[in-house]
Length: 66
Image 1 (cartoon, rainbow, N blue to C red):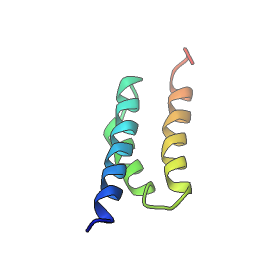
Image 2 (image 1 turned 30 degrees about the horizontal axis):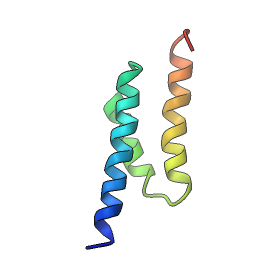
Image 3 (image 1 turned 90 degrees about the vertical axis):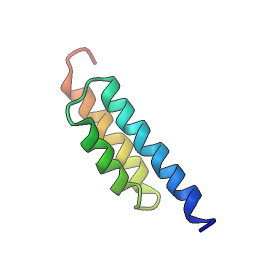
């Protein structure tokens, strides 16, 4: 249990950051991006990177002001 709690805390922080970023820039489906980040963060090393890069690229292509 001592090992699982820090992992869950890191996962929750990551999901909240992705959701917050998506909500802040006005992306549609911000909750879904958070859900995708939740599942991708279970993949070691590459998962968190992919969970962060995809919403960022999506945001850059959604709006003309980027």
